[in-house]
Length: 104
Image (cartoon, rainbow, N blue to C red):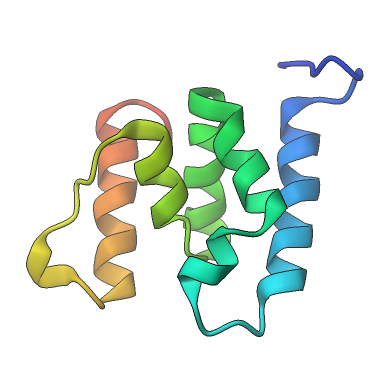
């Protein structure tokens, strides 16, 4: 298990940030605005070690993690024709994560 400098686990820190982000931005209609939230930005700043956590969060609780995934990976496995179709975008990223061995 990865430990953070303050003694907490990476998973615990991610959960705290993700839960608070979801609570504080749940009423926003703009994903761009929600992605500017400090907790979302802190998750992006975790870098590649957060990828399995982000993907698992997306798989289990859905959520709009596309901006974070693109920011961390520099990739975009989605198809242009899937723009606006959240379920398709989500599945593209989950397939990407499986192919990379980041999730099952």
